[in-house]
Length: 69
Image (cartoon, rainbow, N blue to C red):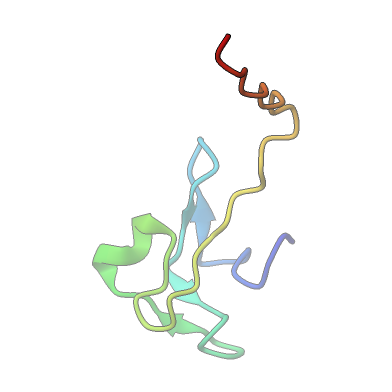
């Protein structure tokens, strides 16, 4: 489990996005039912909790800025 909201009835789409049906961060043991229009956003409409995807492990390093010649 990555976080408190990684359990049923919440689920993940094929691309990994969390569909937040119930928020267990603000609703305790049984969770608070999320507003229907906010479910697909992965954000709780009441407390503002949001699924934060892990940063890409193989991100390319930033190239340093070059000074004008």
